[in-house]
Length: 74
Image (cartoon, rainbow, N blue to C red; front, side):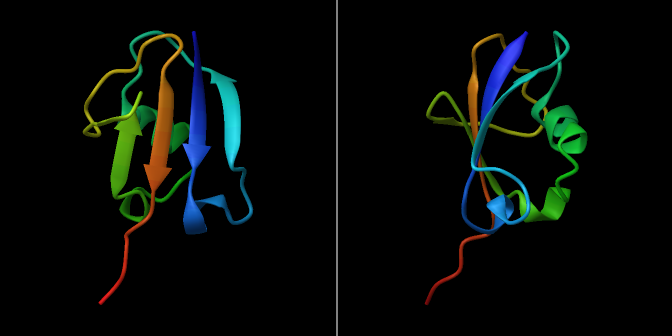
């Protein structure tokens, strides 16, 4: 199955901003982060098809996964 991954802010550095990839059926968001070699603590906000999701949620064919690093501010 295929999903589109969008990385934002510092997660893009040395990687990509958007990419469609093939993944096995039943993969979790955690599995996807591992496959992409992203440090888990750098991915703090995850949306799948515009809805907030957790690391243990499973992905489906055609999903769009947006990942954000920690947000700072003051």
